[in-house]
Image (cartoon, rainbow, N blue to C red; front, side, top):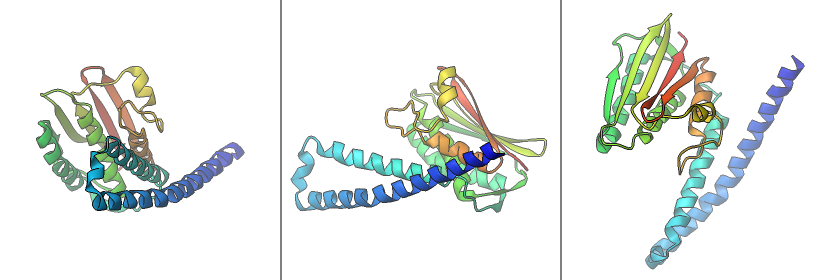
Length: 225
């Protein structure tokens, strides 16, 4: 019991540190970005400088990292609302479909007309599912890409599977993909899937992955009814 209490206190201390850190860094970064934009407006020729694009790109990466750190830090803070899972999942897939259409990736959905009502933090859970869809999309590097979103009931619980026919993962990669700051993408922060799993676990759910290299991956979200 004491060990568990000590771990919980360490987690709270870490969350407080992350919160202070992201807040203190976010303000000067915003000021730097604003001043660089003013420089670009006053001196348009500056964009021809070889390093200008890299500077702006790195600043955007820092902003993304800070946002994901904040999301990671606040994943357990939920505002639960009774949610129609059929409507919820259909809205998410509909909102993501235009991006997939643009990339030439086929979206297949198999969502029952009547799924149970669940209590969810709709904003955070939407973020979690969009992270999984984006992860599936980014794994596809060929012209016949497809992503399948299916939902079904298991003993009164809702299971949602997101499958792709992308690059897949090795056993080693699957063991580490939920570890913060571990990424296998050139421009990834290594926090997206960590945040996703934290959100799902905060809902008393689980997130599992099955993958085969060069064949694709399936992420399964189980939410308790």
